Length: 190
Ligand code: FNR
Image (spheres, rainbow, N blue to C red):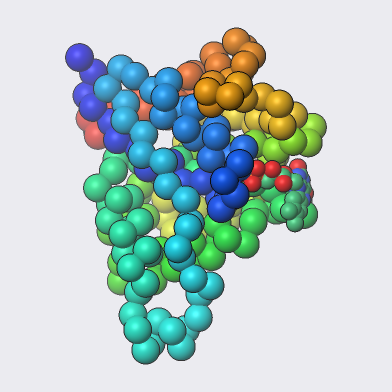
């Protein structure tokens, strides 16, 4: 039995029909071999406002997500692409998660992270995924670059039961999750 690995999978979309959330749900459903995936979204997280933080502290939805991340071994991000970059709701969530700064080491530092994404377009969030790199670097995370998964033409990629209809894509997703889990396990062992 391989070492158990837990991953928080954060989707960058609030949409009920989100392709990115669907991708993470498909990942969670197919994960096996000791890998557990907990899908999260930025739902309930307000816009970052320093005055709100000063008067009311960290919002409950942020604290709750923070603790889910802290309790997990790794973070998987599925980022939509908006105007060739990351979407505001997801950046806003990460900005809140980085408050107060004294929590950054506990929440982010050296935490394994993998970025993926889904888009109805032909490039599958290539630019959005790259736009996260300076953020991950600033937070001193440990990105996994061993695999890439850009789910392009994702509009009709999922069956009604949430599975990916295309066998090749199912294989790519399984390999992505397994590769990231192996990266996490190697870090735990070392
Ligand atoms: C988009 N979309 C988009 N897609 C893409 O591949 N490149 C892009 O630059 C953009 N830009 C963009 C801007 C804005 C404001 C919106 C609302 C949308 C389309 C986007 O990929 C699509 O709406 C996805 O379905 C969003 O992800 P979820 O919500 O399905 O997870």
